[in-house]
Image: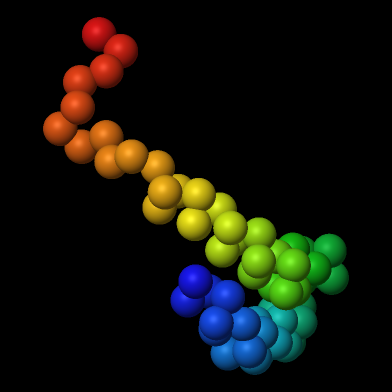
Length: 64
């Protein structure tokens, strides 16, 4: 939820990162991999939500 709410600050910080990467001479295909679009942020948030919804395996014995 917090990732979705922090879309604007994440995008602003990512823009700074992209500028720094370009200034450091990073190849453009690598810079493209650093881009956090709203769709990427939503995908990461969804993955975190799915992980948080999983049962906690701590203290369980499995696969013996």
